Length: 137
Image 1 (cartoon, rainbow, N blue to C red):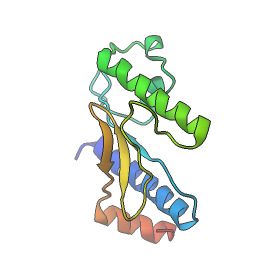
Image 2 (image 1 turned 180 degrees about the vertical axis):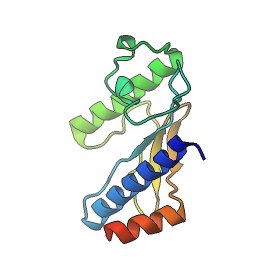
Image 3 (image 1 turned 45 degrees about the horizontal axis):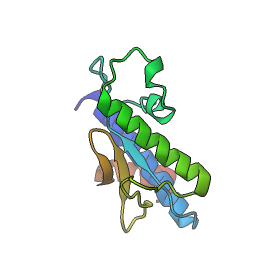
C-alpha cells in the first residue's frame, strides 16, 4: 500500500470521528467532503491542502498545468463554500445535492474527476483503533 493511501485512510477516519462526534452532540448536519482530484504536474496525487487552490479559485497563481476540468471543479467548490457561508447549507442551483453525514447515511461529497456523494468507508481495523483511542465513536 502506498504511503498516501495510508494517510488518506487516517484522514478519512479522523473526519469520520469528527462527523460522528458532531452527530452525537446534536450538531447536524455536518457537510463532509473528500478531495480526490489528482493534481496535474507530478505524481503526488490528491493530497492534504491540494484543494486550497480550488477552494479559493487561485489556480492561476500556481505552477501546475491546470485544465478545464480543474477550473470547473474550482467554480463548483467555491459555489458550495459561498452557499454554506451565506446560509449554512452548501446546496444551490446547478450543483449536485450535498447531504449531511450521518451514521445511518455515511456519505461525503467527492470533489475530483466526478462531483457527487460517495460512501465514506473506513477500514474496520482502523475504525477500531480510533474508537479505542478516542472513545468518541
